[in-house]
Image (cartoon, rainbow, N blue to C red; front, top):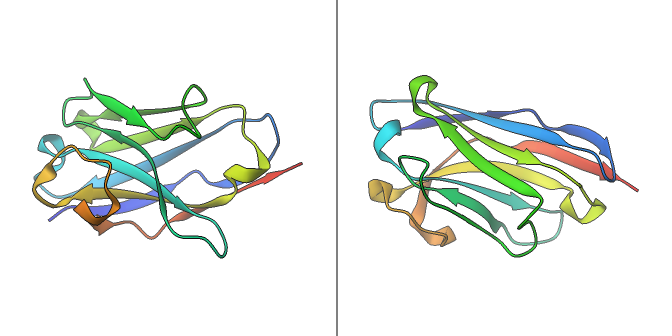
Length: 124
């Protein structure tokens, strides 16, 4: 069972950048896909990005494509989300998550292990 801890959130002006990190513990990190999701106040949690076990495949929500980059370092059991050109509508709590069975998926329902979340606030 993977355990996840996010960090790197904060307050940034529109157009700025942040890098989120998700540190994982457990023996299966290097064999599992990892995803980032976000939840804005009053809205449902939504998919942001996913990366496969090796880092060779990635997939993004249309709303962040071209601005956000997901990556991973299996040597230190960490997945990252580099966020550039941030917009006020990117304001949310960001969660990293691992899917059941480690399968590469963008479906919220497939993700069963979650971190505690980190707040990202983008001011206009």
